[in-house]
Image 1 (cartoon, rainbow, N blue to C red):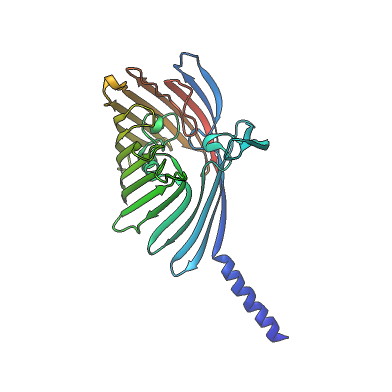
Image 2: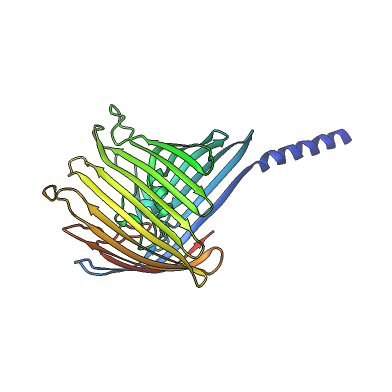
Length: 358
Protein backbone atom coordinates (compact mmCIF):
# COMPACT_ATOMS: atom_id res chain seq x y z
CA UNK A 1 0.00 0.00 0.00
CA UNK A 2 2.84 2.36 0.91
CA UNK A 3 4.65 1.49 -2.33
CA UNK A 4 1.49 2.22 -4.32
CA UNK A 5 1.04 5.60 -2.62
CA UNK A 6 4.72 6.44 -3.21
CA UNK A 7 4.43 5.51 -6.89
CA UNK A 8 1.29 7.61 -7.23
CA UNK A 9 3.00 10.58 -5.59
CA UNK A 10 6.02 10.29 -7.92
CA UNK A 11 3.75 9.96 -10.98
CA UNK A 12 1.77 13.03 -9.90
CA UNK A 13 4.94 15.07 -9.39
CA UNK A 14 6.38 14.06 -12.77
CA UNK A 15 3.09 14.74 -14.57
CA UNK A 16 2.76 18.12 -12.87
CA UNK A 17 6.31 19.04 -13.90
CA UNK A 18 5.56 18.07 -17.50
CA UNK A 19 2.42 20.21 -17.58
CA UNK A 20 4.29 23.10 -15.96
CA UNK A 21 6.56 23.26 -19.02
CA UNK A 22 3.61 24.16 -21.25
CA UNK A 23 1.71 27.43 -20.81
CA UNK A 24 -1.11 29.19 -22.64
CA UNK A 25 -1.86 32.88 -22.17
CA UNK A 26 -5.08 34.73 -22.99
CA UNK A 27 -4.62 38.39 -23.89
CA UNK A 28 -6.44 41.19 -25.69
CA UNK A 29 -7.08 44.84 -26.36
CA UNK A 30 -10.18 47.06 -26.37
CA UNK A 31 -9.62 50.35 -28.19
CA UNK A 32 -12.49 52.80 -28.71
CA UNK A 33 -12.02 56.33 -29.99
CA UNK A 34 -13.99 59.26 -31.31
CA UNK A 35 -12.73 60.13 -34.81
CA UNK A 36 -13.45 63.38 -36.67
CA UNK A 37 -12.35 63.52 -40.33
CA UNK A 38 -12.48 66.66 -42.48
CA UNK A 39 -11.18 67.83 -45.82
CA UNK A 40 -13.14 65.36 -47.93
CA UNK A 41 -15.23 67.06 -50.67
CA UNK A 42 -18.08 64.72 -49.67
CA UNK A 43 -18.14 66.25 -46.19
CA UNK A 44 -17.07 65.49 -42.62
CA UNK A 45 -17.12 62.10 -40.90
CA UNK A 46 -17.78 61.77 -37.17
CA UNK A 47 -17.72 58.24 -35.77
CA UNK A 48 -16.71 55.87 -32.98
CA UNK A 49 -13.85 53.71 -34.20
CA UNK A 50 -12.60 50.38 -32.88
CA UNK A 51 -8.81 50.23 -33.05
CA UNK A 52 -7.30 53.71 -33.40
CA UNK A 53 -3.99 52.97 -31.69
CA UNK A 54 -4.12 49.25 -32.50
CA UNK A 55 -6.85 46.83 -33.50
CA UNK A 56 -9.21 45.57 -30.79
CA UNK A 57 -8.31 41.91 -30.43
CA UNK A 58 -8.50 38.65 -28.53
CA UNK A 59 -5.56 36.29 -28.66
CA UNK A 60 -3.96 33.15 -27.32
CA UNK A 61 -0.23 32.50 -26.94
CA UNK A 62 1.21 29.15 -26.03
CA UNK A 63 4.73 27.87 -25.43
CA UNK A 64 6.12 24.43 -24.59
CA UNK A 65 9.65 23.72 -23.40
CA UNK A 66 10.98 20.84 -25.50
CA UNK A 67 14.24 20.60 -23.60
CA UNK A 68 17.76 21.27 -24.77
CA UNK A 69 16.99 24.95 -25.20
CA UNK A 70 14.26 24.33 -27.78
CA UNK A 71 10.72 25.67 -27.47
CA UNK A 72 7.57 25.26 -29.54
CA UNK A 73 5.05 28.10 -29.54
CA UNK A 74 1.94 29.38 -31.26
CA UNK A 75 -0.09 32.57 -31.51
CA UNK A 76 -3.74 32.82 -32.55
CA UNK A 77 -5.20 36.32 -32.71
CA UNK A 78 -8.57 37.51 -33.91
CA UNK A 79 -9.89 41.01 -34.32
CA UNK A 80 -13.36 42.17 -33.39
CA UNK A 81 -15.45 45.30 -33.75
CA UNK A 82 -15.83 46.90 -30.31
CA UNK A 83 -18.03 49.75 -31.52
CA UNK A 84 -20.78 47.80 -33.31
CA UNK A 85 -22.06 44.34 -34.16
CA UNK A 86 -21.08 44.58 -37.81
CA UNK A 87 -22.37 41.60 -39.77
CA UNK A 88 -19.75 40.16 -42.09
CA UNK A 89 -20.80 37.17 -44.24
CA UNK A 90 -18.71 34.01 -43.89
CA UNK A 91 -17.61 32.97 -47.40
CA UNK A 92 -15.72 30.08 -48.96
CA UNK A 93 -12.76 30.48 -51.35
CA UNK A 94 -15.11 31.02 -54.31
CA UNK A 95 -16.93 33.87 -52.57
CA UNK A 96 -20.10 31.91 -51.81
CA UNK A 97 -21.77 32.85 -48.52
CA UNK A 98 -21.80 29.99 -46.04
CA UNK A 99 -24.73 29.88 -43.63
CA UNK A 100 -25.33 32.83 -41.33
CA UNK A 101 -23.16 35.81 -40.54
CA UNK A 102 -20.81 36.59 -37.68
CA UNK A 103 -20.55 39.84 -35.72
CA UNK A 104 -17.00 40.74 -36.61
CA UNK A 105 -15.55 43.59 -38.66
CA UNK A 106 -13.57 43.37 -41.86
CA UNK A 107 -9.85 43.89 -42.46
CA UNK A 108 -7.51 43.39 -39.49
CA UNK A 109 -10.59 43.52 -37.23
CA UNK A 110 -12.09 40.54 -39.04
CA UNK A 111 -12.49 37.14 -37.40
CA UNK A 112 -9.00 35.55 -37.39
CA UNK A 113 -7.87 38.42 -39.58
CA UNK A 114 -4.81 39.24 -37.50
CA UNK A 115 -2.26 36.50 -36.76
CA UNK A 116 -2.13 32.70 -36.72
CA UNK A 117 1.30 31.08 -36.70
CA UNK A 118 3.43 28.34 -35.15
CA UNK A 119 7.03 28.85 -34.00
CA UNK A 120 10.12 26.83 -33.14
CA UNK A 121 13.05 28.46 -31.32
CA UNK A 122 16.41 27.24 -30.11
CA UNK A 123 20.15 27.77 -30.37
CA UNK A 124 19.69 27.86 -34.16
CA UNK A 125 17.46 30.94 -33.97
CA UNK A 126 13.71 31.13 -34.61
CA UNK A 127 11.40 29.77 -37.31
CA UNK A 128 7.78 30.76 -37.78
CA UNK A 129 5.11 29.80 -40.30
CA UNK A 130 1.53 30.97 -40.91
CA UNK A 131 -0.06 34.43 -41.08
CA UNK A 132 2.25 36.96 -39.48
CA UNK A 133 3.63 40.49 -39.70
CA UNK A 134 6.09 41.11 -42.51
CA UNK A 135 9.66 42.03 -41.62
CA UNK A 136 9.25 45.37 -43.40
CA UNK A 137 6.11 46.27 -41.44
CA UNK A 138 7.77 45.32 -38.14
CA UNK A 139 10.68 47.63 -38.98
CA UNK A 140 8.28 50.44 -39.93
CA UNK A 141 6.27 50.03 -36.72
CA UNK A 142 9.39 50.00 -34.54
CA UNK A 143 10.69 53.30 -35.90
CA UNK A 144 7.37 55.17 -36.31
CA UNK A 145 6.72 57.35 -33.19
CA UNK A 146 3.02 56.40 -33.52
CA UNK A 147 3.73 52.69 -34.01
CA UNK A 148 1.65 52.74 -37.24
CA UNK A 149 -1.38 53.70 -35.15
CA UNK A 150 -3.26 56.89 -34.19
CA UNK A 151 -4.10 59.49 -36.86
CA UNK A 152 -0.37 59.96 -37.39
CA UNK A 153 0.33 56.44 -38.66
CA UNK A 154 3.31 56.53 -41.01
CA UNK A 155 1.64 54.09 -43.41
CA UNK A 156 -0.93 56.76 -44.28
CA UNK A 157 1.58 57.69 -46.99
CA UNK A 158 4.48 55.23 -46.58
CA UNK A 159 4.27 51.64 -47.82
CA UNK A 160 3.31 49.06 -45.17
CA UNK A 161 5.26 46.19 -46.79
CA UNK A 162 2.25 43.89 -46.87
CA UNK A 163 1.51 44.32 -43.13
CA UNK A 164 0.50 40.68 -42.49
CA UNK A 165 1.50 37.89 -44.87
CA UNK A 166 -0.50 34.73 -45.51
CA UNK A 167 1.23 31.39 -46.21
CA UNK A 168 4.51 32.82 -44.94
CA UNK A 169 7.71 31.42 -43.44
CA UNK A 170 10.28 33.45 -41.49
CA UNK A 171 13.69 32.60 -40.09
CA UNK A 172 15.65 34.81 -37.68
CA UNK A 173 19.22 34.19 -36.59
CA UNK A 174 20.32 34.23 -32.95
CA UNK A 175 21.18 37.74 -31.76
CA UNK A 176 24.93 38.38 -31.79
CA UNK A 177 26.35 41.59 -30.30
CA UNK A 178 22.94 43.21 -30.80
CA UNK A 179 22.61 42.16 -34.45
CA UNK A 180 20.01 39.79 -35.90
CA UNK A 181 19.19 38.86 -39.48
CA UNK A 182 15.87 37.61 -40.85
CA UNK A 183 14.48 36.28 -44.13
CA UNK A 184 10.92 35.54 -45.21
CA UNK A 185 8.88 34.13 -48.06
CA UNK A 186 5.11 34.20 -48.53
CA UNK A 187 3.70 31.95 -51.25
CA UNK A 188 0.93 33.08 -53.59
CA UNK A 189 -0.06 29.41 -53.96
CA UNK A 190 -1.21 29.72 -57.57
CA UNK A 191 -1.21 26.36 -59.35
CA UNK A 192 1.01 26.41 -62.44
CA UNK A 193 2.82 29.62 -61.45
CA UNK A 194 4.28 29.49 -57.97
CA UNK A 195 5.99 32.87 -58.40
CA UNK A 196 2.71 34.75 -58.95
CA UNK A 197 1.93 37.07 -55.99
CA UNK A 198 4.90 35.62 -54.12
CA UNK A 199 6.56 37.83 -51.51
CA UNK A 200 10.18 37.70 -50.40
CA UNK A 201 11.81 39.84 -47.76
CA UNK A 202 14.80 40.27 -45.47
CA UNK A 203 15.87 42.42 -42.54
CA UNK A 204 18.98 43.25 -40.55
CA UNK A 205 18.43 44.87 -37.15
CA UNK A 206 20.56 46.15 -34.30
CA UNK A 207 19.20 46.79 -30.82
CA UNK A 208 21.32 47.65 -27.80
CA UNK A 209 20.56 50.01 -24.94
CA UNK A 210 19.04 53.24 -26.27
CA UNK A 211 19.72 52.38 -29.94
CA UNK A 212 17.60 50.61 -32.55
CA UNK A 213 18.52 50.47 -36.23
CA UNK A 214 16.87 48.38 -38.89
CA UNK A 215 17.10 47.81 -42.64
CA UNK A 216 14.36 45.83 -44.39
CA UNK A 217 13.63 44.69 -47.93
CA UNK A 218 10.20 43.76 -49.30
CA UNK A 219 9.44 42.44 -52.79
CA UNK A 220 5.98 41.41 -54.01
CA UNK A 221 5.86 39.68 -57.40
CA UNK A 222 3.03 40.64 -59.74
CA UNK A 223 0.08 38.45 -60.67
CA UNK A 224 2.01 37.03 -63.64
CA UNK A 225 5.09 36.23 -61.59
CA UNK A 226 7.42 37.99 -64.04
CA UNK A 227 8.25 41.21 -62.20
CA UNK A 228 7.82 43.26 -59.05
CA UNK A 229 4.38 44.64 -58.35
CA UNK A 230 5.88 46.46 -55.40
CA UNK A 231 9.36 46.64 -53.90
CA UNK A 232 10.59 48.74 -51.01
CA UNK A 233 13.76 49.33 -49.04
CA UNK A 234 13.30 50.83 -45.58
CA UNK A 235 16.10 52.10 -43.33
CA UNK A 236 15.23 53.49 -39.91
CA UNK A 237 16.67 54.16 -36.48
CA UNK A 238 15.76 55.49 -33.04
CA UNK A 239 17.89 56.80 -30.21
CA UNK A 240 16.49 57.31 -26.71
CA UNK A 241 18.24 60.13 -24.84
CA UNK A 242 15.84 59.77 -21.90
CA UNK A 243 14.48 63.31 -22.14
CA UNK A 244 13.62 62.76 -25.82
CA UNK A 245 13.60 59.87 -28.26
CA UNK A 246 14.61 60.63 -31.84
CA UNK A 247 13.08 58.76 -34.81
CA UNK A 248 14.37 58.83 -38.40
CA UNK A 249 13.45 56.72 -41.42
CA UNK A 250 13.76 56.62 -45.19
CA UNK A 251 11.93 54.40 -47.67
CA UNK A 252 12.40 53.85 -51.40
CA UNK A 253 9.37 52.36 -53.16
CA UNK A 254 9.26 51.08 -56.74
CA UNK A 255 7.41 48.59 -58.93
CA UNK A 256 4.86 48.11 -61.67
CA UNK A 257 1.42 46.93 -60.50
CA UNK A 258 -0.30 44.55 -62.93
CA UNK A 259 -2.19 46.70 -65.42
CA UNK A 260 -1.08 49.88 -63.63
CA UNK A 261 1.52 52.61 -63.98
CA UNK A 262 5.01 52.39 -62.53
CA UNK A 263 5.85 53.44 -58.97
CA UNK A 264 8.95 55.37 -57.94
CA UNK A 265 8.98 57.35 -54.70
CA UNK A 266 11.19 58.30 -51.79
CA UNK A 267 9.75 58.98 -48.31
CA UNK A 268 11.58 60.53 -45.37
CA UNK A 269 10.36 60.64 -41.75
CA UNK A 270 11.64 62.59 -38.79
CA UNK A 271 9.99 62.43 -35.38
CA UNK A 272 10.26 62.62 -31.60
CA UNK A 273 8.76 61.03 -28.51
CA UNK A 274 8.95 63.18 -25.37
CA UNK A 275 8.01 62.10 -21.82
CA UNK A 276 5.57 64.77 -20.66
CA UNK A 277 3.39 65.10 -17.54
CA UNK A 278 3.40 61.36 -16.90
CA UNK A 279 2.56 60.47 -20.50
CA UNK A 280 4.22 60.58 -23.91
CA UNK A 281 4.03 63.32 -26.53
CA UNK A 282 4.62 62.10 -30.11
CA UNK A 283 5.19 64.15 -33.25
CA UNK A 284 6.57 63.60 -36.73
CA UNK A 285 6.81 64.95 -40.24
CA UNK A 286 6.84 62.79 -43.38
CA UNK A 287 7.72 63.93 -46.89
CA UNK A 288 6.86 61.71 -49.86
CA UNK A 289 8.60 62.61 -53.12
CA UNK A 290 6.93 60.91 -56.09
CA UNK A 291 9.72 60.57 -58.63
CA UNK A 292 7.61 58.98 -61.33
CA UNK A 293 7.62 61.19 -64.44
CA UNK A 294 4.74 63.59 -64.87
CA UNK A 295 4.11 62.05 -68.30
CA UNK A 296 3.43 58.73 -66.54
CA UNK A 297 1.01 60.36 -64.10
CA UNK A 298 3.61 60.88 -61.41
CA UNK A 299 5.00 63.78 -59.37
CA UNK A 300 2.14 63.26 -56.90
CA UNK A 301 3.92 64.40 -53.76
CA UNK A 302 2.52 64.41 -50.23
CA UNK A 303 3.46 65.67 -46.77
CA UNK A 304 2.11 64.59 -43.39
CA UNK A 305 2.39 66.43 -40.08
CA UNK A 306 1.15 64.67 -36.95
CA UNK A 307 1.07 65.15 -33.18
CA UNK A 308 -0.36 62.97 -30.42
CA UNK A 309 -0.38 62.27 -26.69
CA UNK A 310 -1.04 59.15 -24.65
CA UNK A 311 -1.48 59.12 -20.87
CA UNK A 312 -1.56 55.93 -18.76
CA UNK A 313 -4.36 55.83 -16.20
CA UNK A 314 -2.96 52.50 -14.99
CA UNK A 315 -0.60 49.79 -16.23
CA UNK A 316 -3.30 48.54 -18.59
CA UNK A 317 -5.50 51.53 -19.43
CA UNK A 318 -4.59 54.76 -21.24
CA UNK A 319 -6.32 57.76 -22.76
CA UNK A 320 -5.02 59.17 -26.03
CA UNK A 321 -5.50 61.89 -28.59
CA UNK A 322 -3.88 62.70 -31.92
CA UNK A 323 -4.18 64.92 -34.97
CA UNK A 324 -2.72 64.56 -38.45
CA UNK A 325 -2.89 66.57 -41.65
CA UNK A 326 -1.81 65.50 -45.13
CA UNK A 327 -1.02 67.97 -47.89
CA UNK A 328 -1.58 66.30 -51.26
CA UNK A 329 0.01 67.82 -54.36
CA UNK A 330 -0.46 67.38 -58.10
CA UNK A 331 -3.43 65.06 -57.79
CA UNK A 332 -2.15 62.84 -54.96
CA UNK A 333 -4.97 61.33 -52.92
CA UNK A 334 -3.50 60.09 -49.65
CA UNK A 335 -5.95 59.95 -46.73
CA UNK A 336 -5.50 60.15 -42.95
CA UNK A 337 -6.41 56.84 -41.33
CA UNK A 338 -5.32 55.03 -38.16
CA UNK A 339 -4.25 51.55 -37.07
CA UNK A 340 -7.29 49.80 -38.55
CA UNK A 341 -8.80 52.30 -41.00
CA UNK A 342 -7.36 53.51 -44.31
CA UNK A 343 -9.34 56.74 -43.99
CA UNK A 344 -12.44 58.27 -45.51
CA UNK A 345 -10.64 60.35 -48.13
CA UNK A 346 -10.10 63.20 -45.68
CA UNK A 347 -6.79 65.06 -45.41
CA UNK A 348 -7.27 65.92 -41.70
CA UNK A 349 -8.26 63.74 -38.75
CA UNK A 350 -8.55 64.12 -34.98
CA UNK A 351 -9.13 61.28 -32.52
CA UNK A 352 -9.66 60.94 -28.79
CA UNK A 353 -10.19 57.65 -27.00
CA UNK A 354 -9.39 55.01 -24.41
CA UNK A 355 -7.43 51.78 -24.83
CA UNK A 356 -7.37 48.88 -22.36
CA UNK A 357 -4.97 45.95 -22.58
CA UNK A 358 -5.55 42.69 -20.75
